[in-house]
Image (cartoon, rainbow, N blue to C red; front, side):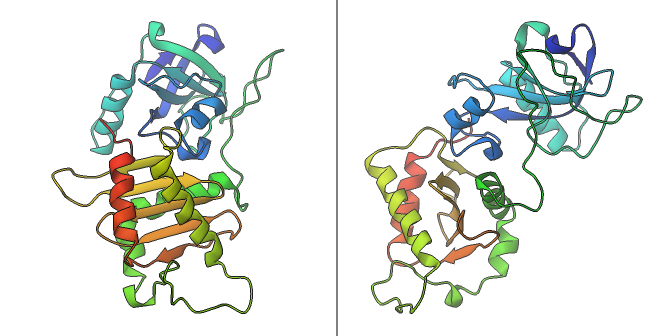
Length: 270
């Protein structure tokens, strides 16, 4: 799979993977919402969105090519997800930008070219994109963790006995003699309710899954927290202040209505 990369002259780009950057579907590693994700790449948050094509040039350098042919990239991703081959070759006229580096970790590499590396910078070039450092904890790691919970919901759900999940908003919740980690969870839930009064930037609340009244998966982010939930079930919250921890939230009397309201507010993949 090849595409022309304007930042690399006439060299071909050997495409390794691709992803969408749209209001309803974007790499959350880039930001809490769609405008923030676009800003991380120096792009305008156009409603139609973009496709991000990650690959190597003939010298092995990493490049992220931004294209405006969203449908083409979406078809390629859907084909690959089904195990089908698809030759993704965006036209030159669809290229919006060529950015050095990759914002996501890519484990494969193009055959017959040098190992992946950042291209030699030229004056005025932006710093190469790079994925979050391993072994650290940052807002990007927190969002990626929530993505993983949402993606592997059944596995996370099987670990949790509903009777053991606290309801942090219960008026009879036991008092804590020390710092309560659920203070951050309560603050996140309160911020989520604020979204219903004053809608947040687009993409900060996203809903995915089947339609027709079936349960939906909710992903939401905010100031130092991320949430993954199912509209028919409980929720999980991750916090910047609690590295690597995942806090279950019971389906108490207030959570169902909040999740349904967030689902109505959320952007959905078209």
